[in-house]
Amino acid sequence: MTIRPIVTLPDPVLKTVSKPVAGVDDEVRALFDDMLETMYDAPGIGLAAVQIGIPRRLVVLDAVRDEDAPRNPICFANPEIVWASEELSEYEEGCLSIPEVYDMVTRPAEVKVRFLDRDGAEQEMHCSGLLATCIQHEIDHLNGVLFIDYLSRLKRDRIVKKFAKAKRQEKEPV
Ligand code: K1U
Ligand code: ZN
Image (cartoon, rainbow, N blue to C red; front, side):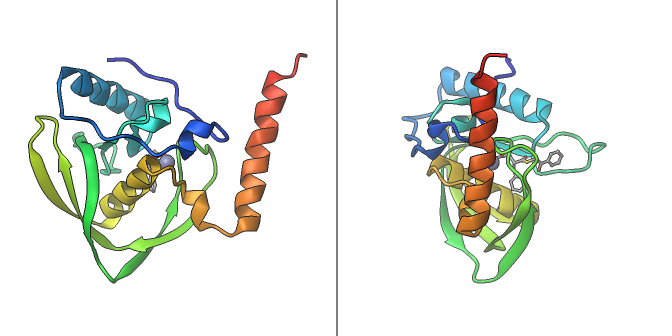
């Protein structure tokens, strides 16, 4: 298992629509393992493959925030939302690809997700609470959507500009 570098704003790969996997084989399982290692190391509660520069429809999650609780990793290949509640919930989201930026996002409070699990079997999972917020955030990543896309244009532009400037300065010779 390898900790991979996490791609950050304004890397254009974050705006790409990820491609589905044909199935879950050993190569995909090895990628899931690297994604989990990278997510726990960050630390984070979710990660999409595109965040390590691989635009495939793969997500890992562990939305148990209690550090003393046993780990509960979940692997999703080709996840899709097949039902969303009318009830909404608001949560202050963060993103490993936009470090140190947090803001409130409103999303459906509950969703049902269809996906292939680590063994390649089709599953449906009813998600509520933080799990529902997190899986929607991760499926957005697979569609090239970031949580800052839900903010006002003013806020979003400020964030993008700040990261673009930091990237430029990183490249400038000292
Ligand atoms: O996709 C990502 O960038 C991961 C992101 C997931 C997420 C967090 C909050 C709401 C929606 C989606 C993160 O994991 S940000 C880091 C974070 O939330 C966290 C870090 C350490 C402990 C607990 C949470
Ligand atoms: Zn994110």
